[in-house]
Image (cartoon, rainbow, N blue to C red; front, side):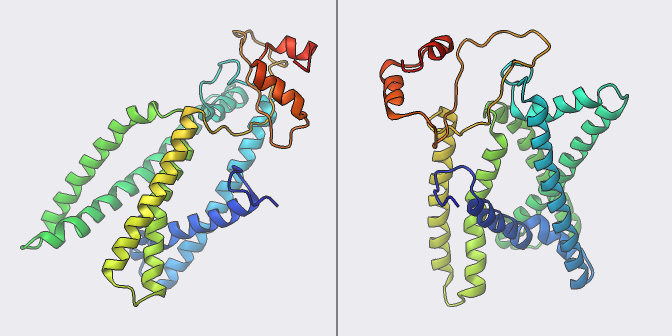
Length: 297
């Protein structure tokens, strides 16, 4: 049982962090709240939440299985090393093409499923953000309340503006590197954590006033922003590197440009002794054939 906060994934980190993450999503997320309110009764909302939880468990299980399947399939011929794939998020589509490419229509069905899921989530998010803008940032400052038609027009215009911003951010995401999923989760945690804390504070600590909640929220947002953005900057610059599972290209059946510099990730519990590590740090990295011929360089 590893309690170190420096380890990328631990059983405690995944359990506690995952619990808080999904509790925040199901409890205070605007998308979920709108879904709850669209149902006629409380019992219907509870049944919908149970169905959602079962679906999430199945989805995460399938994603985990897909990851293990990708590793097992490409263990002896890593597409990232051979440059057949440029990023990790291209491995699953590549696997689909390798396995199902001979069946007409199946790769297209896979792409259609991915796009439909993405567009569904995007439409829900845009609608929720437009509702938040209207209710929290516009209505409190209006002397004359919106008519129903005026509110509909305003929300549609807001959705168009937010959608345009999202499309424009694609060019920013393209330059963000290969850890986009981790970046999106980290950025979400920066705002979700303080929001969830304020929600629980209002529920469990009713004697705290609005000024205290505001100060606490700003402090939490500032700390989480510093922590998350600093970590992402360190990952992008290469100051933080995570251990990777071993892969090889010995089983490749196609030609590819040979990689001159091989980077090997050494786990914390490496069997290398201190003298070898000191020699490596003192003399710098050596070509692979020299390391194999003279292991104590």
